Structures are given as C-alpha cells and as structure tokens.
Length: 221
Ligand SMILES: Cc1cc2nc3c(=O)[nH]c(=O)nc-3n(C[C@H](O)[C@H](O)[C@H](O)COP(=O)(O)O)c2cc1C
Image 1: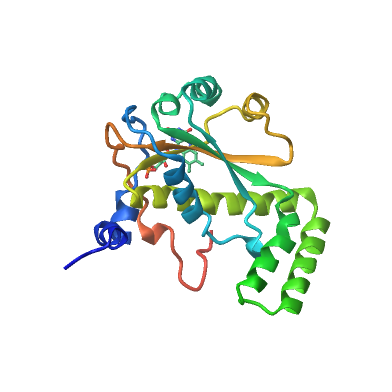
Image 2: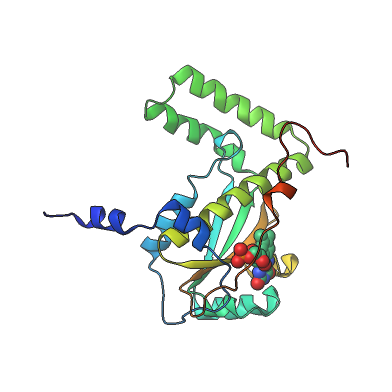
C-alpha cells in the first residue's frame, strides 16, 4: 500500500494521551537541534487554534532564535541555561489592542461562509465597542487568560511534533521589554523554551484530584 507522507506523519503521531502525559518541563536541550521557520510557524499556527475571548486571538509571538539574541535574553531570564540551549525561546505576548483586528477576523469568518455578512459585521462592531470600553485592568486580564491558553496549547503541540518545552515566568519584565523593543501595547505572558531534550524533564507529581474537584458544591472552607 502506498502511504502519502502526511498520512505517514499522522500514523506516527503520538496519541493525545501520550502528548499530555509525555509533556514535562525540559531544562536541558540538545544544542545541535534547530527548527526551521516553517516548523516553528506550523507549531505556532496549531497553537493559535486555541480558544480566545470572542475569538480575538490577542496573542503574538516573538521568536528568539539567534545565538546572539538568546545570549542577550539569558541574563534577563535569571540566567536560566535553557534560554541559550533551546532551539528557540518564544516570548508569548498579549496584544492589548488585539481587539482592533475584529473586522479582519469576522470578515474572514464571513468569507469562509461561517457567518452571514450582516451578523459578522455586527459581531465585529460589538467586539470593538465592548473591548474598547473595558477598563484596562479587565482587558489585560482577558489578554492574560487567552495568552495562558495559547501557551499551554503551544507546549502540547510542540510535544506532538516531537519537541520539548519549558514555560518560564522567571524573567525581568522591564528588562525584557527594553531589550527587545516591546512597547506597552504588549503584555509579556511567559517565555517558552522550545527544542529537543538532551535530558528528560524531572518527574513531578500532582495533587490528588479529590483535593481539586468538587461536584455541585464547594467545601465549606
Ligand atoms: C507560569 C509558569 C512559569 C514558570 N516559570 C518557570 C521558570 O522560570 N523556570 C523553570 O525552570 N520552570 C518554570 N516553570 C515550570 C514549572 O516549574 C513546571 O511546569 C512545574 O514544576 C510542573 O512540572 P512539569 O511542567 O514538568 O509538569 C513555570 C511554569 C509556569 C506555568
């Protein structure tokens, strides 16, 4: 039987359970492994299938992949060695003006036949009016939530592609913004190192689900 390359990739793709259970924060990377822009874009495009508030997709990705820029980032990120070892570090950003793309987003939804023109237009107008009228703090919260969702999806997608990641909140935000010309329009959500593990991530445990999940009512305290 002749199997096309894409069918073969799909057949070899790990199951969702393998992806979820196989993802661990990796802090040691094989420096010889680099990813092409095409591969990084494919991973980011799949990550960007994550849900977002009103589908505004306010995430943006600054991919730092040159040796020089990774060396510049490392001291800003608490000197964490994964910054220079990984193939790339992705700065996940939330665009505080992301909702201004509402027209573009809903026009595409309409063009693809997913929504009639009048509905798409009214959705776009309503989104711009709504998000534009929110207090900055509320808007930032939404952008952070969406940024968290895309970040997690990115890490799982990377695993499904055979790569490893570690999310990093250990960095100086002001220095990061200054060093990489990130204006106040963008909120840094987290850094994600992406590459191929040289050493597996250390095993971690989770709280028992009984301590986390409550059916129908919350405990008294
Ligand atoms: C928002 C956030 C920030 C984190 N920051 C760092 C960091 O700066 N450096 C690091 O080595 N790990 C960091 N981690 C990784 C956590 O330590 C890790 O996810 C946790 O210990 C669970 O391990 P696991 O990811 O292997 O399941 C961060 C994780 C999250 C979600």
